[in-house]
Image (tube, rainbow, N blue to C red; front, side, top):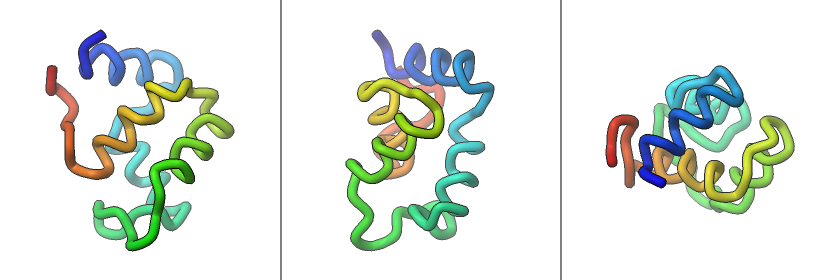
Length: 76
């Protein structure tokens, strides 16, 4: 599955875009000004996404990759 397919599936399932998740992550204290806060572990973000949005591990890790700046929406 391509990265974009993960993002498309997340949008279909949750109705939220990567930017929406960034805003929510800022409210949770995971991000500040679009950057990961020091000490924030991927596992904490994955746990939140699984709990609050019922995302699977791979889909949650796609959001983490966006938060880390490793991928962007539209990447393949």
